Every structure is written in structure tokens, then in C-alpha cells.
Length: 314
Image (cartoon, rainbow, N blue to C red; front, side, top):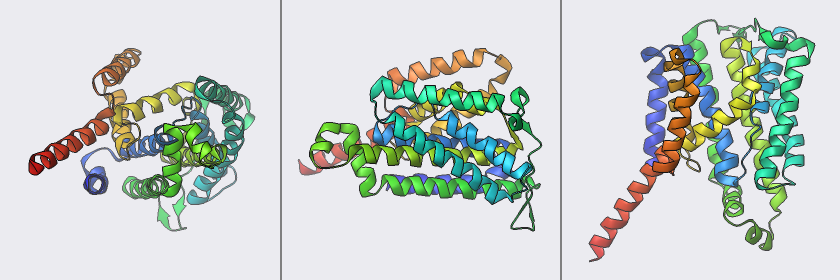
């Protein structure tokens, strides 16, 4: 019931948002929200901490941008090209990374992501430190001008809903239940006959693909792909977004992404102190709201239900 209420709130807020705030800023929030949801699938449900998700987010942005600018792809096909690239490198990285667990898994993903960052810096078509600029938005379906901010916003919102729906369906399926079993007790899941490595690989690839979808969409929104999107710091930020909102919850990453991205934007005048402020918020959340914002709300609601049920029985 609570998920339905939160989804209704998210849907209504998404429909009216471009009339209440700067559309480009809200589109940025949606891209990061999808990125955080993709990461949460891996960390919150499979229990795998990746420090390399910026590789899929940033790498897909460059490929989508190149496909749109140089190859002349239409908008949706350009986004699919970037998403497909994320799927491919996600498959390769996942195959290599899932052979390790814990901190070793995290370090392997970080090392592999640094390779993508180096390629984004050195390959001739990426623009080096200047990034890939001048990415055209083009026309959707050949006649809908995406130069209009409102039109572009609703395309981004639709892409977000599709990505969110795919992740939601994966979570609320037998596949998602197996992932949670692996997270809670991998040895027991293995003893029950599940091919644990295959499930972890599938989760990794799906997470990488959705992260690539978010990155490709962001490149189209800003008409620019930069090294920042592929930097390890972006991988750290998505961890923060997921934990602040509520790891292992459906809507937690959305709220976490909105919170962190908004704070980063609003506190931009503080310069490098923004990282100090965000770090402080992270420490406070871990110590006080260990389940994250949405996680704490879920816990409170469940406690109230349990207390009410106990009172009725008495």
C-alpha cells in the first residue's frame, strides 16, 4: 500500500515538476534518480558494493553522444547505443568482478572503471579534458523538436518511468527474491541449488545497463558528455544517494538522489566545502538513520502496524 502511495506521489510530482522548477535541473535529478535505482538493485538487493558504476554512467554518455553527433543517430537510437555499450561492458566487468566478494569485489570494479575513465580521457573522439560537446538533441520520431525544454523533459520522465518499471519488476519477481536470499546468506542459497554466480552476474548486468540508460539520457539533456560522469567520485556519490534514501527500498534511491543532487546544486557557492557538507550528512545518516530516509519511514509504519495489531489482540 505504501509503495502505491509513493508511486502516485512520484507520478504527480513528475508531471507538474517542469512548471514548478527549472526543467533542465529536474531532468538532471531524474537521470541521477535512475542511476541510483540501478545501483540500488546491485547493492540493496544483491548485496554487492560496486565502486565502478561511473564507468557505465559516463561511458554510455560518451557513446550516446558520439552516436548522436558523429553518426547522426536519432535521439532514441543514440540512447539505445549508449545503453547497449553499458550492457556489453557490464557483462565483461561483471564476469570478472563476481569472482571476488566484499572489499575485493569493490576494488575490482573500481580498477575496471578507471580503465574506462582513462579511455574517456585519451581516445580522440571524446574531446579529452574538454569533454564531448555539441551533442544534438534532434527530433523525436522525426518531427517532435527536443529543443523545447518541456518536450525534452517529458521524454526524460518517460525514460525514467520505463527504467524504474524494469527495476521494480526485477525486484518484485522470483529473480529479486533469489537476489535477496543471496544477500542474506549466500552459502544457504548455494546449498538450495541456486547458481549464485549466474544470478549475481545477471544483477550486475541489469544494474549496469540501467546506469547506462541514465548516462545516455543525461548526455542528450545537457548536449555534453564530460569526464566527471566517468570519474570515481561519481561512483561514490551514487553510493551516498542510495544510503541516504534507503538501501534496499524501492523509492529510497529516488529520494536520496534528489536530496544529494539538490544539496550539491544549492551549496555550489561553498566550493570544495560541498564535499565536507555531504560527508557530514552521510555520517549523520549512517549514525542516526541507518535505514535511510525511506527505510526509517517503512520501519516506523511497520512498528505502528505491529503495535496496533498487538493492541487489537489484547
